[in-house]
Amino acid sequence: MSRSLSAMVDLRLDPGGALILSWTEAPGPRNKAVRPEEIAHLRRLTEAVSLAEGQRRSVAILETRAALSAALVELLDGPERALAQRIARADAERRRLDLVVRARSDDRGALRAHPATWMRWELLPFAETRRRGAPPLTVVLQLGPQDLGAPRLLESGGLRIAFMAFSPHDARPELDFEREEEELLAALAPLAERRRARLRVVEGGTLEELRDVLLLERFDVLHLSGHGVQTPDGPRLVLEDAFGARCDVEPAELIEVLERAKVMPELVMVSCCNSAEVRGSVASFAAELVAGGVPNVVGWTRPVGDGLAMVAASVLYEQIGAGKTPVEAMYRAREQIRREEERTPAPAHAWGTLHLVSGSAAGFRIEDRAEPLSERVDRDEVYRFLGSRMRVLKTGFVGRRRLVQRLLRVVVRGQDLEPKSGARDVAGACVFGMKGVGKSCVVGRAIERAKQHTPELGVVVVHGAIDERAVLDAFQEAVAVGGGDATAEKLLARAEERVFQRVRRLMEHWRRRPIVIVLDDFEQNLDRGTRVVPGW
Figure 1: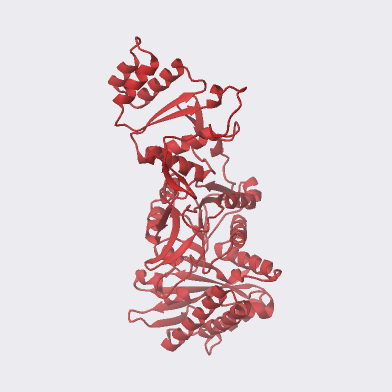
Figure 2: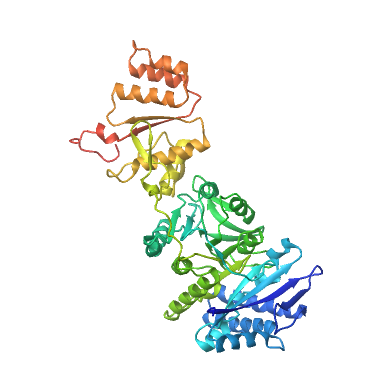
């Protein structure tokens, strides 16, 4: 026998705007019109919950959630006590009731703003949870006509997750995205060790980088972490541009990237404040994604702290990695948050703001008897060479995003951006640090990004001790890599001139071409016995 009992109820929006309630199986009404005053009452209760949550008034949160919970139960129960009978049957059979609220409309475009999207269905069990100490059922909102069925089995024996954090330097508060990466890696470590999960960190916070990663690899889950905002034009994610500045992204832009992916992810977790909030007649970011074709989206209806957001993600992926469906995993994640908050003196009641909306409530699951994910070379250990001897990461460079963005601005714009003084013109940059900390990798990544903006950028790499032979070799290699320049080759071949003179003539020849000169491993040119004077 299945560990859960499934049930589905339809809320159909007809062409005239009326809302029709129908249980797909008896008991329960068929084609019952929901009165406008009932809808208005639910809207007021939902707004009261949001107001209490926004003001962080614990007593008011409990009272308004209880009132909304009772109203939602009354809506579904009716005189037939359709919901109560199903809960009683699940109790008698010692099973959990899994309820799917199916939002329907002949106009698929109307689903994103369907009345069911603002009704906060995750709070339906609230009153019973307080009475029993545990929720008697799970509830998931489904947009669209998909019938209940078996979950889709993933083709691999593990969960493939793409993680991208974004925190523009001009958006406050600035998030510690590198700490989030570390915490998620640590949370997934037990699954990763058994090859039941694999995390790929998207090194930047731009939509372009996300697109490139999704084009090349298959992912089951996309995890987005950063700021979300509500604007007069609708919800937006506050991503970064190539220089780390703010770049607001609307749902349609993210949907386009996901549609062009090698494979559409089965689940997108938008771990951003208000990502599942419906405000007035404006659809939530989560509902927009599902209406646009994303199978499952998890978001938050209110602002959430980093700690609780990470708890939710950790439990969600742990449970899916263990073979559970998204609905089952969400049940466990909410319960974990609820129990942890019960032990705190000032709970945020965040469990009731974690929201799942689906295009197919059956979801997906990992076949835990299948072969684990295959071994592969660690991307962080794949290198290429910039110049003949400067080794930099080929792909998968993680961390130091701010430094890469700062160097990119220096190379492309000739400017440095400091937090307090703002932009100032500069001729170059010096990257220093102990040997082996990744200085060359940072510079190489910044130059790679710069060439995306300025494809004609020439790169000259002088490695180690600077002498005439090393300088000549570096410029000759730059000419060869650039596809050949007969004039440049002749200028460098003038043996009767000193190398310095040849390079000056070459730079005059290249005066309209952007050039970056990298002095790699420059410490070989320093006299170790010389005292370094601060400011020199």
